[in-house]
Length: 248
View 1: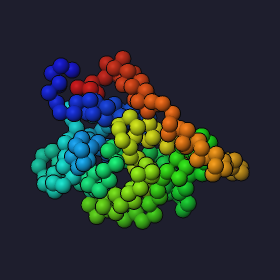
View 2: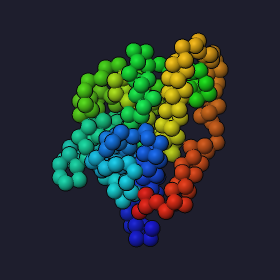
View 3: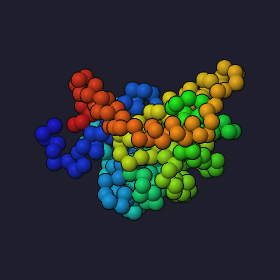
View 4: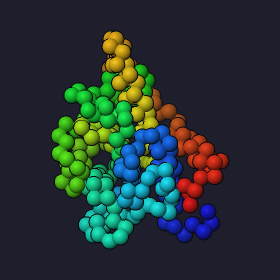
């Protein structure tokens, strides 16, 4: 990777590229849609994001766009981002400085959950308890996420405790402080949603944890040491062992 050492924010780009590759491997993406972004300046308004309509399985560190949420000319020129990606992610990076990383997908089970009239995720297991009182549900889908819709969605993420937005009739938005934290949260939310949807499909009564135990579990998991970092490190090690070009 020596020829790439002059690329700005190289490690951030490598981490993002690994997250894109693994998201594709887990089939959590959708075609050439969906987007991840990562703030790279202090106030969060400058951010990296995937190129317009490039498949997650091909994205490399050097492919990331560098955008400024306060620069509307970002939508012009040959390297302009997808307009809906710009609308959603620029709104978040303009208004939610705590959301350093934002990952938006239409993964199957999270989107099924977002399609239910009641999109709450009851704490029926440890993974579901992870998100107890830590998500917000958007009940006002207004069409494709151009700038007005992006601004509306960003307003729903003003509470730093709420790291997940279940986007009714749409999909999921996960935010976090780092790529590792955010990808780990994305992974476990999809697992939690799958457990819940499959449990509902049995038609049997659900074993729901008490609020007290659900909150205790969520706090214990938030304090669990370095799992998110180790998770991403292991995924990069697997990609490296396979000779992947994600870091180039």
